[in-house]
Length: 157
Image (cartoon, rainbow, N blue to C red; front, side):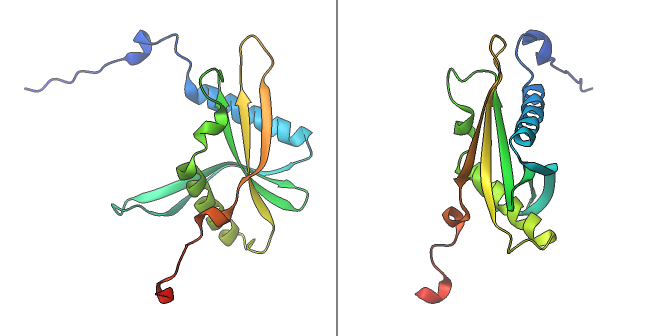
């Protein structure tokens, strides 16, 4: 007879911060900050299938905030940390994350027929410190689509 054993790590690490709560607080703070700075929110937590990986498994992409900054459609990634002692929130927006957001934004623009609309990729970095006011920074045009365009085409050989 087999026996099911479950391990409850929360008891052992009860003092560890819940990263999902920190992330949610960061996204809410970012949305308020963007509104206060003239952005118009379109949608939060947009999630859509963006293709399949090398193992033919469905891959979904998510964009934290989609907003308008004047006539520019902004795809905003929010990164929140409880401290920037070891690394900044921006360090988590690596090339893999940028590619995933770029693919998701391409699907979003196609779904809503916005291929000709100007757009950019912004990052909001937030450090939520218990002893100080939150530090919120917006990095406009953190990357561009050019980084992910094909370098060559098959007919160029």
